[in-house]
Image 1 (tube, rainbow, N blue to C red):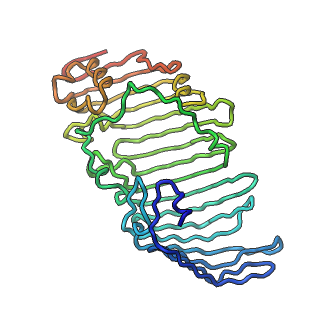
Image 2: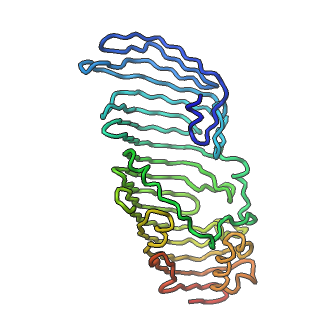
Image 3: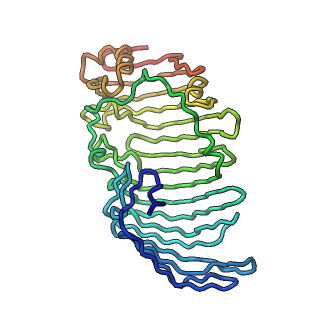
Length: 366
């Protein structure tokens, strides 16, 4: 149990472990006729054989894990483990680099399914590879009730635009300790939007990332939800003496939920956004100070709310918006016909250039 307690944020159930083993050993093989591990509401069963000599072959261990209630296993700080079943089956076979691989992982959880393969190598340094496909996962049972009923119109902003950027080191040392490769494809997901009941933040997700010799490359991060489509590519190179960062992001039909009126997401303008930034530095502050890039936004027509923006955007953001649109402080809504804005980032300074244009039912501003 003490090893489970080392998982950050996880508080395991105070329940005894029960282990039973039926095995035999020879110079060539360890034969597992029956393995059974009971803990709380979970039961792990296994059987198979593992080669103990270089001349032996045919190593494979079949595992099956069942739990009728995940909540019985303990608590996770940011998540609520649901009263939902879990079933996992896997076949473990030898892998490269004195490691192992699981070529046929299958998991039934959260009313959905996860399948794929996972491998681990120990030499010359630890390496992890995973290729997973998820369908139909419903994340609603994982989210606390208080988080799923946030009133975005009344919730005060926790972001202070005047706060100093921390002089905190970028933890690139972690990137040098192991290599990894992850491919994930998720469809039919249901991650709820806490501000808009019945809407989802995430429905489909495609992810491809690789970590090698201290360099992390995110070749693909494509997310689809009711706020729109988001695509991100990026790199953090921690193999250099001074870490380097680059990020590119694009959106299609994206909606800023903070600006929603009582008519909800449907009434908001859709936006096409392009963002690029490059920076180098050993701390977060150095990355911010050396950042260079650009931001482009092209927005369509729709209705936005003007009330409560001082809480949502902070005083600086509200004053900026009020300067651009003087009717913000006088009217409850703004009906936008179209708008666009262009910004550049030069050595950490964010500038509006060449400018912006906004057309509403009341005024044209450039």
